[in-house]
Amino acid sequence: MAPLLRTLFFVALSILSLLACFTNAQLSTNFYDKTCPNLQTIVKNAMQQAINGEARLGASILRLFFHDCFVNGCDASILLDDTATFVGEKNALPNRNSVRGYEVIDTIKTNVEAACNGTVSCADILALAARDGVVLVGGPSWAVALGRRDARTASESAANNEIPSPFLDLPTLVSMFAAKGLSARDLTVLSGGHTIGQAQCQFFRSRIYNETNIDPNFAASRRAICPASAGDTNLSPLESLTPNRFDNSYYSELAAKRGLLNSDQVLFNDPLVTTYSTNNAAFFTDFADAMVKMSNISPLTGTSGEIRRNCRVLN
Image (tube, rainbow, N blue to C red; front, side, top):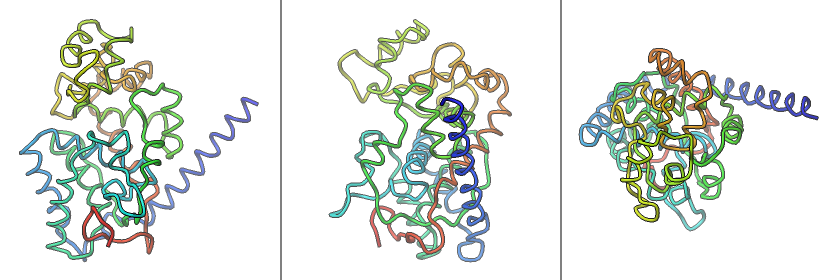
């Protein structure tokens, strides 16, 4: 039975990869060249202003995009406020009082609408903003294929079920990524996005108090930030060496048993961790490639969905 299950798993992954290729053919890097030629400049300028005000926002927008794509695809559903007909994703457990950056996307959307009214989707704005946020804090760039449309609904329950938890073990994480057409390699490299940003105490308390595969001095320093029974929203950098610069220090920290989240440290035995810890260029290349793959998870195209005029509400 085990060989059969392995065969079925790889067949399913192959089908998802084929679907991703078909979707990618519907998106284009020059989608708005005629209808909104200054789009990328508008997005980059707004992201630069946001990060100048708060360096953490590069990481916040990257996480916002990740959480959007993992719930029914990269369709800006995470940006929708609740309505009388659905409870959206903003108050799902992985997002509530944790995911941030909505106001930055609002600002970009306002600026884009002023230049190109009713033309550019919130989904495409979020994809571009995530890329620019990484670049502006020192990370790699990649070409963003455009042409996504915006979802007309959102689901709190889907967000609760589909966004990977920081408490998961490695096999479960690999399975959740495979369900999105992403490989175990993609899991390891996309987790490198934790080289920037911060996490709340409630998400790493169990690791620093209960786990043994952790540097004792690191655990002690995090306990000073995160008491055993209080301070759930206290913050710690996900990677303490260069918390506001996108680089490969995340992997060096894993090698030293200084991963903040359980879902980070479980990656340690992957040989890629060693590779990336000593080869920043390899990490940057693979991260850019993995972001392109993630950006193409089940987007709405053609006549599906809509082009929202306000990212928080349906037209």
